[in-house]
Image (cartoon, rainbow over all chains, first blue to last red; front, side):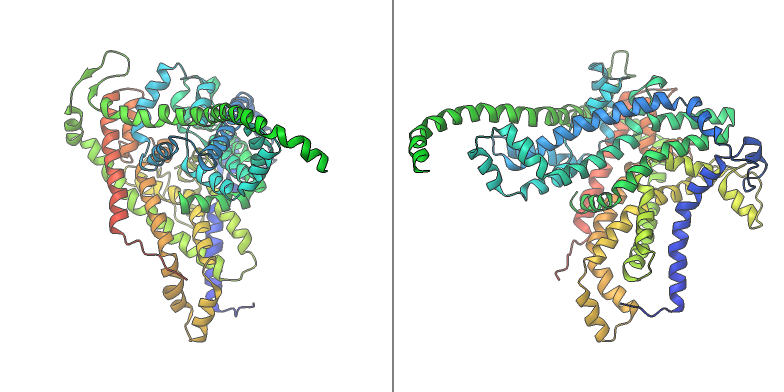
Length: 278
Length: 316
């Protein structure tokens, strides 16, 4: 349907473009400045650089030990993702499609989490982790991040699983499949879209997680990228090495951008679901 | 075919009997793996600390030496602590402004991308959501660059259009730091709500609008008589989320200013965080008491909003 264009349409388009500009402009600006030299940047933030200094990126990579923090990130995000995704999926299956004693009680206790803001639990949680010698350890962080319940993920996956017909499982049982086989060969493949959605959300959550690594890791050699960028900014206050920091921030954005390009539709759908149900 | 049936039939009861037993053990092993690690983790890392925080709030404890039980005196101290009140005032400012701007801006953008047929709308929707996938650290650093006094983008733009305010540090000044954090927070949050509101608006049946057009209703009438009332329940839920989220959020402030300068951007969550994990001074007991106050405020706010904001949905 073609709409009649009026003068107001120009105004509305300007509004849309204005907001787009607030998003794109700072991002492009950071990338633009990351290719200058420090003196060029200090002299005039608008002037074009004499040459594009891609070496800022290798300098940022070395100076902020991106190699090490990338390994830390891979270990922490990968470990939490694999462990967390497995437990979330099997947990959702047990809680939505199996009957057992105590199921209602477990659901009730999980629902309680909707009322807990969590912030008052930070200190006791830290003390518990310390008692278990899980502080200053990426493995400890993986356990903290992947063992737990989330109403959002349970609803998302549970909703998906409960829409699968019961006959599927029954016929698998008839064929002599064990419960584990049924879970792996029937439920998991059929719930893949839901599992992928949860996986993408978990990935972003872990990759972007700042507070937990910041609280629990005291050794800078163990920092994942997010915390590493924070401390890079702190260092910059003394070194005034702006362009390298710009390059570093740009590098830190790359994984988010890749994930977003690959999964934007799924992310936008999942986000709505979370807000409506959660 | 009949042969195999005849052969199999007598065996079935035996197999079933055995299978049932085996299936039962299997079921319990399966349930053990499926329930114990995640639910146990939840009990240990979420529920238990929440209960424990009530007890911690009554201790005087630096986290290392022996704790002393001091009853409710931490709460008395907290109520007399001017920093607590200052932080709560800042919370109140954020709690009103951030959700307000997020909702207004995202409603407008959502309305435009769903009700106008500009060809770039699809792309804009994707672009608008992008800040939501960035980490808080990146968002906070981007805005710290914008607000920098000597080389910041904001002063650069102002100078470019002829307003030279010198090296004014937006985040380094007590009078502007608090207000400067608001746009950063709004910027990081709008995208999600654009998507939520846009989807809600897309869910409204076209027939309603067509009928309204036939009756001679203009753009504004349609907006305020059809669109707005039908998305009100979603706005309500979103507002609740935003208010509670802003009340307890402090990461972006921690990164941008860490409460400074001179505590002018401190919020209650950050105050608690620095009491517990700060560099100079640690008091787990007092931090927990402040955390409990925040807990009570948040739960009360949630219950009050649930009770007093009318929850009327519309059927269509």
